Image 1 (cartoon, rainbow, N blue to C red):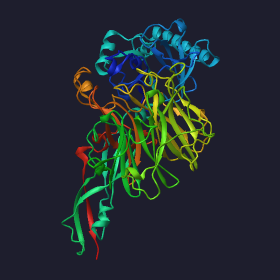
Image 2 (image 1 turned 45 degrees about the vertical axis):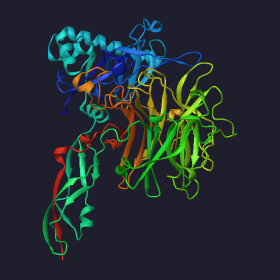
Image 3 (image 1 turned 180 degrees about the vertical axis):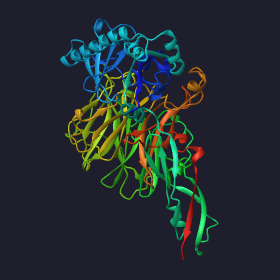
Image 4 (image 1 turned 180 degrees about the horizontal axis):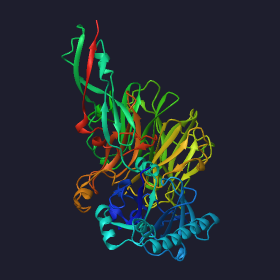
Length: 604
């Protein structure tokens, strides 16, 4: 018989604003249990389902939150959620005083907001279905009393005793229970795969290896296995000095699974980092917070680890060109038609004039020589007009190719006549002139969820990685402080990417301040006292090394109020091929499982 699981949905009580504000706490959280009493928080005890913001007539967004979520299984095997829509401070939403929101979900991972009671037939039908289920549970509860099934029905309608509430809060700090339902083992495994970070559980090498040289032995890889069922081939540092390669025989050889060590940070005061590969070398570039964003420096090395200590060279500053007087932001390396470019933002004056630019490396040029870079050119539309006029700014432009078509995505913010916040736009790019669009821009995403409009309405910093026919676009949301997070948009490479309906937006971020343990979470200190952790992680990029391993470079803060600095870790893909951004070094390779051994057979 398949094992059953219990799924608890809940909200949380807010903490300090810079740690876990109302916009985050007033969302639906989920926790799994095998017995209905011992719970494992999903998504680092962070929200999974958020209410969408409401658009005002002037185009600005009015953020909303939710309370009292109730989760239930529908007759067709899918799931429904009802919740009260509230203001972000927890007060009543006067517009929906007597109504509740309705959501549907096929997998408990992605949710569709159907609207409020009476707002549409789908929402009305779902709410009616929920009401029927609740009434049925009330009847069963009356008949069953406090049996095992009776307790399940009581918790389904959200009737928790104070003792049960206290027990839940002891395991899930700050939890305010909504209700609990029974789900299948298949559904539980799907949730664990998506919302629990995998751990390294085993590292396997062949029992015997036939090799004629040290080079052949060094080619033998270990298969690292993870708790979610995923795996990865890793290099091994073999200790084989005792092997006599010119003498046939059998030799027992030990080795350590190889892992690069990148303590956070790898670069202080460097934000929006990017690592690129060009002509056999690796290059690092980032926003320079140390001098107020007035210069761009790059590093060059033969390997990614060597970039950490490589010498920096300045290639651009605010004195070189009259149209770039400061705020040199978010530089990225991109190779287009076998030529190296740097996409970055800059302004001739105030922040309100910030615009996207493209700087090309001269043919045959050396990236480490400032004079080998052409003057940055402002990005323009197809008709050579400005990408965005006097109403606002553009920044954080990234480039990618999918199904043979080149695209750019950027963050655009209208300031006049009213500040609408930063939204993501997408367009085709002319690869012959990478500073010129090849289609009209389309709106791809808005900061509609509480995690993306925390402290300010911003979505920015897009970057794309492709795998197995899928296009994964990470982006960052909220203010550039301890509340900064990383979200994800996903599409199929062969689809029309200029159609926003072909992109799936995750309801919650993939990376936040709660993704890596900190002194706030471990010791319970205040934001002002925090001195370690990775707060406000975001604005990342990806790079593949010579072994085919993908790396994730990002910025975060050491402590809540620390400087923005760059971090680096391996990018993992779970068993379903979904990117995992919070694979810390200890999860990636269990320190107790690093040693492996094999028998090397040297034949004559």
